[in-house]
Image (cartoon, rainbow, N blue to C red; front, top):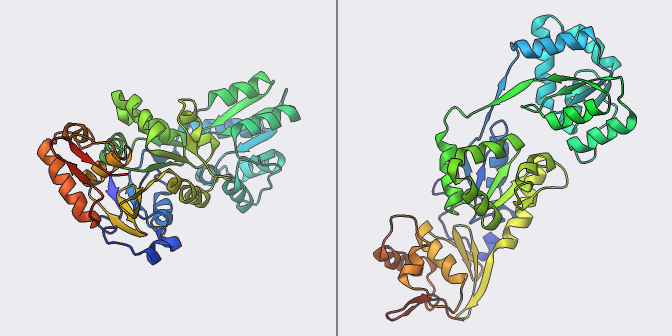
Length: 381
């Protein structure tokens, strides 16, 4: 795990500063599982005040020298496809670069120029046009289901369809086209591989399980599956965290599908763009914040901070965990033993007292956290 800005969000933000767009996500911690575009995602989130945790779930391995892709390319030259599905821009560019290395670029371009080209999104379309080719159709929602429906409605019986794989085989779509009478050539233009250093990913899993991140971004379905694999026997607990406390933000419907199948609520932008994904997080994450009025003060809880009378005050994990537990049951007295459950494993009741003391100091507002002698603590209502 890499914290892009360790300690950089500790200062109190005034009400005026917090009202700026650059502070829209101040107080929140967001995990980023992308590899290829991690810096872009992180920069956009940080520009809105978020603390970012980088933990690539996968890495893309180009396979320009892979025999399987070369064989599939030869198959396209021997039996020119009637339809070519271009799934990603990076995949299209990689395929043409690999063909160049094999001395097959011009024959391949000639074959592609005669095919019905489907570009599944703007980046795929841009790569097609940069190559001097022309795409005939793109789905509005950029989903595979739309592509399959369009092609089967158009008619594929007796036709050859070349389908660029999105990092891994997608048998359900291949089988749907074959059931409609098509011959499908799968093009494995790149593959997913585990991250070179798996430690950041495992650390992110721990943060999700501990509810120490507020949201996790996913830009591929493969990354979702990789995070679940990294959780191992804790996968069910991780899914529970994503269902209840940690927002799953996915770039589009293809990416979100593995989570939706597991009944995890997700947020996705209207268009599958990284910039739109960040805008969606800005819109949705603050809606989950707990707000209450205490002793004449307005308090809103953000991930690792409290907004008190318009000012954002960052708090350490243990004081924040105590505040969140008390705020979820305003007026109710919670014992030290009950609050201990909210703290990291290994803590004792003395740690609860220390967390309460640090919480009071960090909030700098008297009367918000009351001690009830011999019983515990509460937030008065």
